[in-house]
Length: 486
Image 1 (cartoon, rainbow, N blue to C red):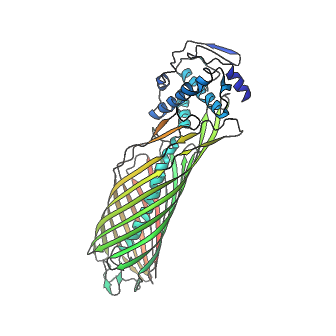
Image 2 (cartoon, rainbow, N blue to C red; image 1 turned 60 degrees about the horizontal axis):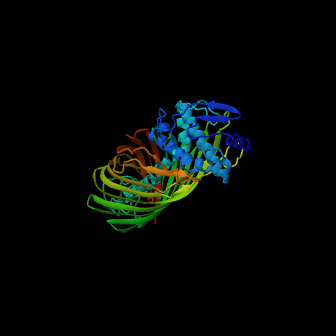
Image 3 (cartoon, helix red, strand yellow; image 1 turned 90 degrees about the vertical axis):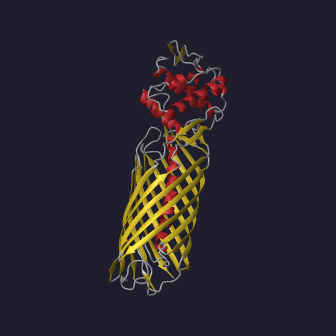
C-alpha cells in the first residue's frame, strides 16, 4: 500500500488527464473527459439506471471532495485520514477505468483493466443492490404470521370454540354446528373446554431470478406462532399469540447474505353469526437484520485489485393488520368457505453504516467503500379473494378432512422503492439511490392439505402451498399446526 501511495503521489492527475505517469511509464493522450460532467462515464454501453447513479456518485466523491484536497491527485498525503485516502484511490481507479473503456484515455496503470460488462459488475458490487432483499424479508415475516393466525381463526370461526380446522366442523354437545351431520369420528372433540392452546408453523423456500435492478437470490424462511384463544360466547372467539421468524437470503454470487430474526406480538378475534363471519388481527413486529456482501473490483492480477467484505447490522419495526369477511356453507360432509380479506403491512428498516474488512490480508483504509444506507419504508396493501373446500371423513380414531384452498392476491403498493445510500467517509457528496423492482400487482396461491380432530379433541393440520403468477419468483410453503383444549 505504501509503495502504491508513493506511485500515485507521483502521478499527475490533471484536470484533462492529458499526460499521466505511473510506475515510470508515461501515457499521453488527449482526453475528452469532462470532470464537471459525469454523463461521459454514464454513456458506457450497457449500464442500467442504478449503475449510472453509482458511477455519478463515484465521480462526485472524487472531483467534488477528494481531488481538490489532493491538488488534482498530485498530493494524496493531504488526506490525513487513511480511509479517505483509500477512497480517493478507489474512486480515481474507477473513473480512470471508465475513461479507458470509453476510449478517452489509453491503458493506464491506475485502471482496473475491465471490459464493459466487468465494469457494470463492479458498479453492482459497489452499489449494494442486495439491500433490496430486505423488503422481501419484511413481507415474508408479516405474511407468514398473518397466515398462521388466519389458519387458527379459520379453525374457530364456525361458531364452535375452534373445533374446525381449515374448514372442518364438529358436533358440539349434541348440537350440530356446521357440516358433518352424523359424522362424529369416534366422539372426536366432545365436551371441549373454552380455552385453547395452539401452535402453528410454516417452512418456506423459493428463489428470485436476477433482474435489471436486483440480484437473484434463494431464500429460506421458518415461522412459528404460539397462542391461546378463549370462547367468550357461541359467536365470539379472541386470543393472543407470539410469533418467531427466521429468514435467510443467499444472493446468487454464493457469498452475499441477508438474515433477519423477528418476534411478533399478535392479537386476534373472530365473530360469526349464521353462516357469515368477520375476523381480524393486529401484529407488532421487531426485527434484527444482518447483511454481508462482497465488494470486488478488478482481478487479483491487477495492482489495484480490491476484495473486501462489507457487513451491516440494523433493526426495524413493522405494524401489520388483517381484516376479513366470509361466508361458509355445507352440504353433508362437504364444506365451502368464501372469503375477502385486506392485509396491510407498514414497516421501517432503520438506516445503518456498513463496516468492511479485506479478504485474505488486512490493509489500511479497507473500510473506504462501506456505505451508509438511510431508513427504508416498506408498505404493502393487499386484497385477497379466496375459496376453500373440505370434505369430512369419519374414522375410528377421529375425523379427517382433506382440503383445497385458492387465494387471488391483488397488491396496491406495487411501485418500486428507492433506497438512499452514500459512502460513509464522504456522505455529503456521494449520495445516490438504489432502485428496486416493481412489485407484482397480482398473483395466486394454491394449497392442498389434510386436517384432523382426534378423540379427546386434539387437532392438527398440514398443507402445502405454492405461488403462481409472480414474475421471476418461485415460492413454496409447508404449513402445520396443532391445538389442545382445556
